[in-house]
Length: 280
Ligand SMILES: NC(=O)c1ccc[n+]([C@@H]2O[C@H](COP(=O)([O-])OP(=O)(O)OC[C@H]3O[C@@H](n4cnc5c(N)ncnc54)[C@H](OP(=O)(O)O)[C@@H]3O)[C@@H](O)[C@H]2O)c1
Image 1 (cartoon, rainbow, N blue to C red):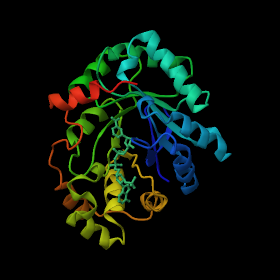
Image 2: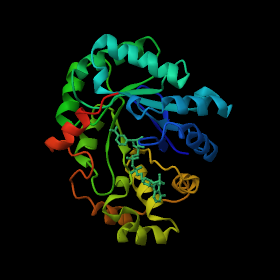
Image 3: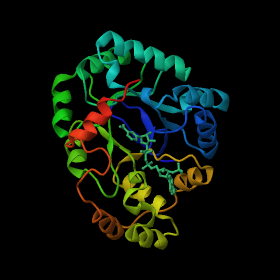
């Protein structure tokens, strides 16, 4: 495993296991398999409804809590300072832990400043070890930077070879905010796993398109949290620390960038309405 250091000094694995759309009833089993494979960073959220499964798996693993890096996120329907703070307590209970390593504002909707104030308070009281944001574009990001007391250590956004968001990454570097890529496989869209460039570059290193795509992002300084419910794929996605993509091949993969969101298009009113309508 490789690590990065967050701006608050905390160490974070560069590869984690994501739980979006993972059946709450199966989440414990899958997270246990991920832990067995070697994953220690686990990405869940209040709205995924599988924090409990994560908590069970972590507890039953017998591995020391401080070896894990657990990420969760506050949903926009929990906006309001008191409500947001209470929701952190609920997440702690479900995760069966005394602290969450990183808690994010899931979406920049509703009164998200009240959520951020609650996160700052939760950070001060030790309920969470780090705080951050998700799905913040450059404008919303810089506004948070200008109006917060404690800087976000992470912005979790859609990033994959087809949407690399280099501009956002550069803008955030100035303030020490790291990028965590959601949908590092673009959720399989655009025939991702059969992409000819990913496949031909991967063949040079004896790696699959999936492994090549993850390694590419990690080499760009991005933390990745791929999701799979198949143990063989968990292993495949974990086996990316024994090769380096050359700068020439990095350039080739760079050329896949369309500079357009494939999944979370926040300029699309229908996408925004869809997310706003999701209640806990
Ligand atoms: N903050 C946010 O708003 C936000 C939004 C979306 C996601 N996320 C986080 O980011 C994580 C990852 O994103 P995601 O789940 O949307 O998409 P993703 O990781 O890009 O793609 C997951 C898809 O790829 C398949 N897959 C995984 N490994 C594979 C492999 N080696 N070969 C072939 N297919 C493979 C999975 O199928 P199988 O499961 O069948 O293997 C699944 O269909 C989420 O789980 C969640 O934790 C956050």
